[in-house]
Length: 455
Image (cartoon, rainbow, N blue to C red; front, side, top):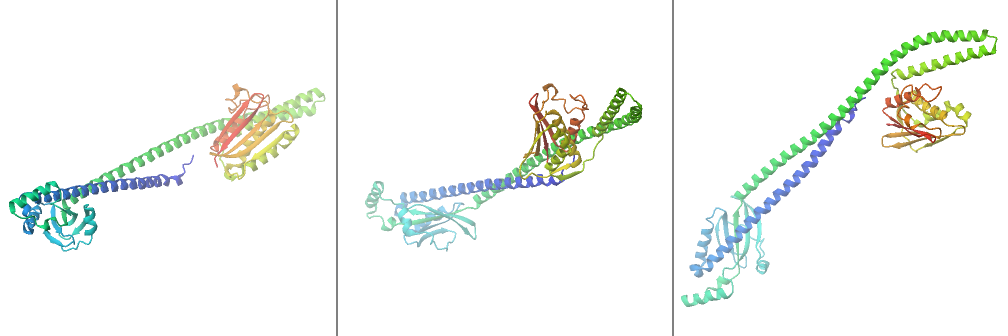
């Protein structure tokens, strides 16, 4: 058995394809994790910014800041920017002009804030911008209304009027926008570490998955090679057996044929010398039996000797037609009806023409002997998963159930004049072609031989 080395790149291609698919999956999952981490960081910064803005609003609403002027407001913002996470705070008026600012110097215009739309919705908006000094900054902008109309605020205004003798300045009620810039360096470092960890895990998973797939292919190849080696060993054992039997058969044939030739010569001589008809008949029987023994020896040698296959691409239907022609006289003599059915577009099959002709001829000979006069033999060839299937069926006597397991054994026969080598030789030839032969039969209903050959 030859192991096809041309197929060896297939596992490598499969491993590369599997690794590529796993890589895509891991990249997708890693990207998803990174994006989820980015959203988490953004949510944390958003909550931190909103909390700071509300804290500033609350501090202005209470205490002495109730009388706050711009200088006092500036002081409050500066104190807030002392926190390490806060980069800067800006306060804009309803026109987008900076009222007060603290922290890092900001010269960038804030066209991204539509003050009119912003005043209507009042919802916080965010963006991430690059700062040349500290890197990325998370900006959150929101309406700034420390003094909100309501019963509580009205009470505070009345108290202020009684204590100070005047109302709160009108500018305290104007629409303002506060922008808080939060440093992202620490969170970015956490995100970078998280990405690094994700990439390490992804790489480890990729290596493990690729290694596992490679191991599976190695294991599979091990079993395939091991099976092939076992098949080769079995074939070697069979070949050695055939060689041994062949040597014995050749030796026996030589020892038997020489005396048989002498006996046949004497029988022919006595046949010509005998005047009595009865003696001539006996001599003729001796000659025929000697010929039969010679045929048995020839068939035994054919079965026992190891044959070297000469494989070529052949049309199976051509070999069948040739075999039918060889048996034409027997077929016509019994008036047998041959029905052939071949599937269209049959593939060529790699076979030894002489050996396969011998196998098909033996099956057909078995069928012609099994059917009665005017019997029928059906021959068909069709495609199957394994390759091609040849079917030869007859409506003859069939095979007894107890003999079904023995028909391919050498020297087993139910015929008076049979040698028991024909079907054993068929089995040997089909096995040599890596094919399979099966038989279906019922006594009195006929027999069907099924041969499966790889293309």
